[in-house]
Length: 285
Image (cartoon, rainbow, N blue to C red):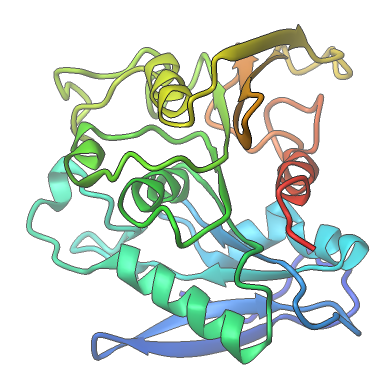
């Protein structure tokens, strides 16, 4: 799964490829720490998408470069392969009904292990991911909300089943989704016509977190359309409460697809930088 081939990583230190045993299974991960990183620095966990890998998202997100410039470390866990040899996180897709691997616990346990081993601040641990990885962000936020300070799911939906075990506890959320996504639907799929499982539309998902976080204020603006060649633009919706910092930020990429903005698709923003800016505002000194 992880080949050890590095692409487009102009960082000070080389990422470390290693394994961690969870429930008797040897799991892979990549860990990156800039040179001279201070103790108690933040840790950002980045989850790849369905059929992808830790290495691929490390390369296209360029989160290592942002870590080097801003003084945090990055952890890229690796999913396992299903019976069709596709790498995945077990979020409960309809075609993974009989899969028993507990990826929620794996990610939480691995993160705690890395945090303790490399002396990160346990209060400044954040989670982001793409597609299937974004959906795992939502699932963990529902089931293990105290494991991460904030989440930033990109191009992911929230299956109805997530709410079954949801603790309904507030956590800051930065969500990114394109209205023309052709993998998962912006308006949802209540009848499971695509086979992933039933899920609500993205606006309903944002409303759920706004309600959970008691965000009663709303500010809407449109980001500058920097790139006129990508046929898309971003409407920013910021929901917040005056009583706490558990806000909900939503980048609605109008005409955007199943993309990681700044890597492909919408090029008005570097979403990796935007994610870190959101996380940075939540860090505790």
